[in-house]
Image 1 (tube, rainbow over the protein chains, first blue to last red):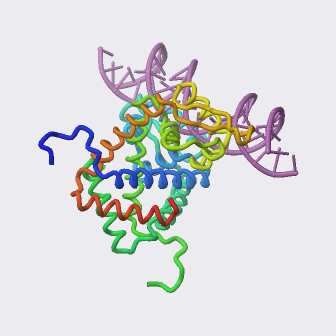
Image 2 (image 1 turned 90 degrees about the vertical axis):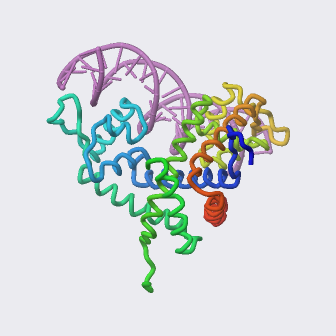
Image 3 (image 1 turned 30 degrees about the horizontal axis):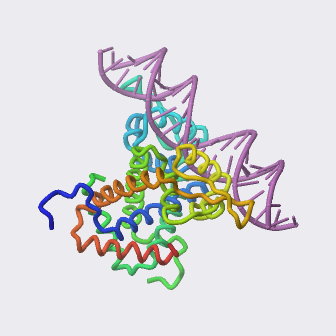
Length: 147
Length: 147
DNA sequence: TATTGTTATACTCTATAACTATA
DNA sequence: TATAGTTATAGAGTATAACAATA
């Protein structure tokens, strides 16, 4: 091994290729899944984030990695479909609390069920033991990034 | 184990969660990477597909999972930026052959280098042996789907 | 002054439907 | 008739900049 840092550490080309391909495959399937439930992928993500909590526009923007203005429109469109509500924040009159409506919770439940089926089918070629190994490896990657 | 088929085989919830989270993380990073290179993710994907071959609009649409009309506009925008060219197809006057320009090849090279760094950093918490295991598991999932 | 959310604007991506040129 | 590509149209997603209300 070189003693110099490797600015372009190409790593394992096969792994890079596989990670990218799996990411595209999973995202593609998730997008189709959301569309089947008459949602955009971003809307599904947002409803998922709100499943067990209430967030402000700014907090949502941070969690989704989007600009506040993007989230403002996203919430407006999702609210028009009756999946979320905007409530006044008693603690700060400038901000808005976004919550999931009962209808949104139903949509999320349906989406999550489908997602489970989908990802289960993706990992179907693996043995239960290998699935556990895969989960462990992925989780270690995520933990390291604070996810 | 039950003798009945499981219509909603929830599989391993931890694995499902991890797969989704990794897919979002990878896609997010790839999107930012493309943006840094002044490209959309779709444009980067397309240029990548054309790296070592020439494809028609219809073939591109199939490879990208998009409608031909979407690809038509995509190619037009990408051509405006000088990254691809449209050439007549001598074998069939109806169709168009899309190729990467030298400028597109440069952009792709830069993008791929960054992508290598990026995914290498994502898998950095894993030992080389674990990276090999991860690549093997992912590849088995992909092979099973004909990817 | 700083922050929260919204709006105006502009662009990309995507699909459906209708069209043309060619096969 | 069937296929390849384009165009018109529409809607979602996204960002930047400017703004009003509140802190």
